[in-house]
Image (cartoon, rainbow, N blue to C red; front, side, top):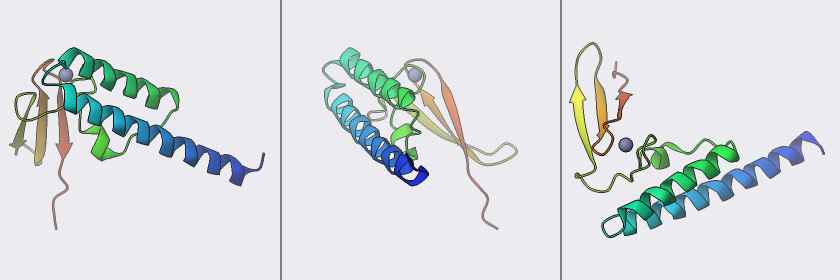
Length: 110
Ligand SMILES: [Zn+2]
C-alpha cells in the first residue's frame, strides 16, 4: 500500500476513534449522577479504545475526565481547579475521587 493511502486510512481510523470516545464521554456524563460506576467504566473503555488504536485524543476530550481513575469531570463536585503562581503560572486540576493532580502551564504573554 502506498504511503498516502496508509495515511488516509490512519486518519479515518483516528476520526472514528475520536467520535466513539466523544460519544462514550457524553454517555458517561449523562449517567454519572445516577450510575457513577457505569460512567467510570464507559470512560475507561473509551480510554482503552484510544490506546489500542494508538490515537492521541484532542485536548478538549482529554480534559474531560481523570486519566488515572476514569471519573468524568462533571460539575465542581468531581474536581477542583486552582491557579498557582510559584515559579510560573499554572492551573492545577485535582480529581476529587482519587486525588490525582494535573498541571497545565500557561505560557506567559510577552
Ligand atoms: Zn481520579
